[in-house]
Length: 486
Image (tube, rainbow, N blue to C red; front, side):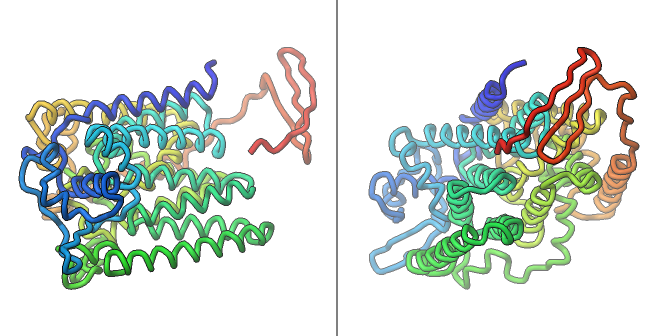
């Protein structure tokens, strides 16, 4: 048996190498890096060279040409008489990429994101094993497969804040589910503070994680919670003041040319929340932007949470609330489910929590285990296939990725509903998928658990702080004290 450290390194290496397969893939036919990505890179370049967020000189000098051959949509407006222009995107990702962008350009920036994705995979594996007691080998396979499949590997090289946010979120879960100390409180504050500075859309997830921590410790750690609350309140005030002074509004969208009538137009001018409710299913099933057609293993996501509830798995509420909050933001808050990006963008921040839940399901149910293995590998194949197509100018990662010739995706997409044209056919297909999901949940929840062996090779009895271990094969009889290893 290899050590756990070796498995962590293996998952890191696998995630990084699979991500690198698409490092030279084209986002569009006119640009290697496109849509919002150039905005992050230009801001990173401005921080590296000018030590500010003003990208007006980078735009005037067309510093984007090495990675965006066409004229760039500037996305921003003049903020003062000097023509200052600040990208309408939160500044933490550019700050993280400033040194790589200044030293090695867009390629180094992408490699840095791939490394962050690999760290996120390692953190997810560590939390699954150390906090949720998933066996090391199984957790390593499940986490490795999901991080080698879209959307996790997609956002390992696309320049968006999704993967750093996922790292911050899973770090919070790892801290919240462990014992408390001053250093861990500082780590939690740092991780929670990072989320809104990566993007304001992560504020709901931040609030939920902070609430879980507070509610779990308010009786026993009042001094630490008082310090935590004070620092988080101060952090929120600083966040609002800086955004008001720098961007001209409470969010970065105040500096965007798309929202000149008000920064909160980012949610939509007249949002139809009832109609957006369809996204609850569409985020999974949609023929182009659903998770399942690209990585069928995500069909196990909802049954995994149903199993957590049935078995009352310790700390499962953390995974459930985190995932539901992120899913709710993608459903009712996000402007659209379909856009100029890879599918699942709004969900990446909470997918490590979902992956941990599916790892627990795989350990408790052999059928689901093999389904996740095979469905995850199908997703890895989809990404490698499309990465080759996008690198050789056959397809792109943003414009026409859904026209890929990958056979498994082509087969699944033909039986998946199109939520952009929700006609009778799409309604019927969505109903069929929902029925299949309900059946899968029922079979999972009501499946009888296997009976324990009548004559086990090793048994134990737990009383207070003592575990008594009795063996029948080698006549082992020993007692040992149990210490907190968190």
